Amino acid sequence: MKRIIALLLVLLLVISGCAWFETKEERTAQELVSDGIDQFNDGDYKKAIESFENLKDWYPFSKFVILAELKTADSYYHLKNYEEAVAGYEEFENLHPRNEAIPYVIYQTGLCYFEQIDTIDRDHTPANKALEIFMRLQKQFPGDLYANRAEEHIKKCIKILAGHEFYVAFFYFKQKHYKAALSRFKWVLTNYPDVGVHEKALQYIALCEDLLKKQEGK
Image (cartoon, rainbow, N blue to C red; front, side, top):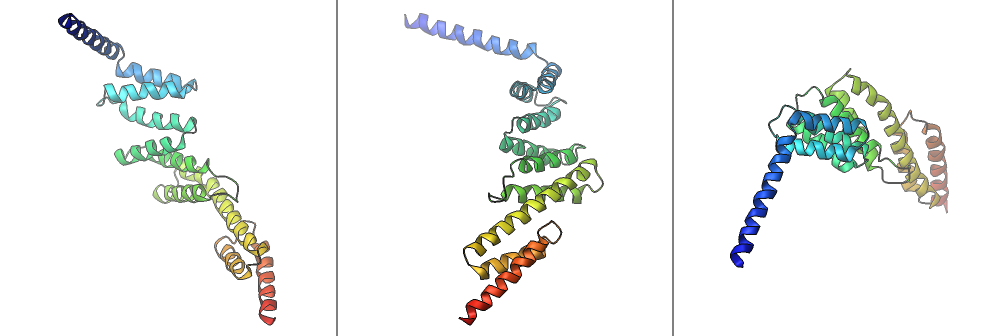
């Protein structure tokens, strides 16, 4: 009985192994990348990722692997899985630093953080990261199409960061921590002079200084 069971297990493994090889052989690298692109264009990003991952696993030395790596990251971006998308874009940049798609890759990495920016009273880390990446893009590839596209996002990031700093300064002001508020308003004035908060910052600086003098005079 044990011998029969052992033979059956071996047979099962052989059959399943053959099925795996058959599946692999049935799909060439070109067919897999074609499937992935079609699925991507149809908005079926999960299926696209599956096709691209199979391509990378089955044909790691194929000329289509670079495309599969990039489109996998793009698929995660469209699924709003920004953490995986950033990981994919950063890996692509590390593996292929001279590839012609690098400006696009850096731009997309910045977009992943930009899309996560919340209201001015929330964590401003995504705005800082997006700004850092977009500015790096402009420095590395001045005049590039994607560097030019990044300009508008840079302006929005700066405006959001200025709004956040003003919000923090105003919070201190409302709590009557005028010294801390004054320092923050001055910081906003120095670092964000042309984004629409200049006049308000000046007004609150004057108010803080006046209220601090009154406190000292008591």
